[in-house]
Length: 199
Image (tube, rainbow, N blue to C red; front, side):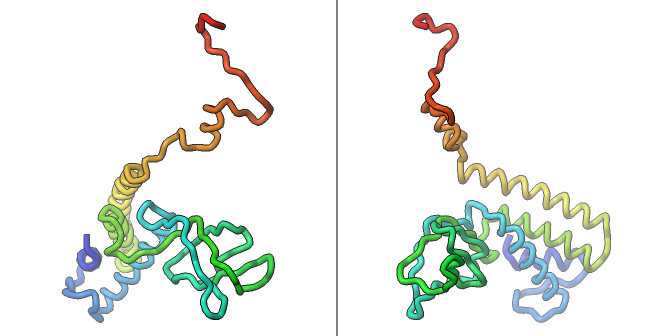
């Protein structure tokens, strides 16, 4: 679902005429676009397979500061003293924004544009935005509830694709890996298998 298609869906729901361009100055379209942007940003902040970056290295600029893109909504650095405030990285221990060496973000969430989102996420955001838009413009609880149910169904598809893309494995969990190696918090433990003829 393109951004224009989603925009026109919202407009039709309130009885407004569709538009031919995202650049339109129609007031209803402007409100619909603002709702879509707010919802897409809200949905993406959770972090999904398509907008999480790992092990990103950032170099200081000429002023020895590290400035991240405004699209980065959250970030975890390899040094816990580093935090992001606005778009600038701060060292909260040394109380400085000056860096002499590169730093590494081990995980960051990037807010992407509508067309960069997978189709299942576009559909989810469109229905979610539609439910909010109808609530604000029409105050129609029944129509809002129907759209919210459609959004919930789309979210199931988003989570399904997340599982397919990331293929999470229980054996990747640290505690499971330790158990398989026979490691326990309180010393060595030997395992006895019932029915083993050698035991």
